Length: 114
Image (tube, rainbow, N blue to C red; front, side, top):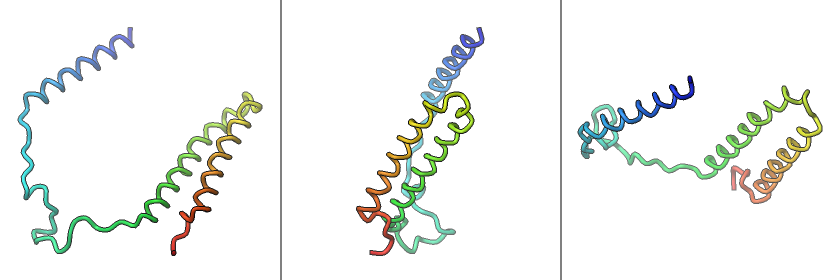
């Protein structure tokens, strides 16, 4: 009963929000509203600053390995149930990530200065 109530309320709320959104006026994007704002002065430089691709690559690698830790943490509490199934799975996961890191290192993606 609770699942049916939850699903029906979700559908009802979604329908109400769609109908209200349809009748609300759409906003017109003006040039002044979409331009960057620097304390009331005209912008000195372009709002689009150059971004280091190396920094972006290091940040993505950090996120990947941070996600790895987040995915490996739940293995520890469940290791008491069946270690024979969890050890190969986590080992394969770590080997794939280590191979990706070795490939990135070999390609020179981890070298900050050229």
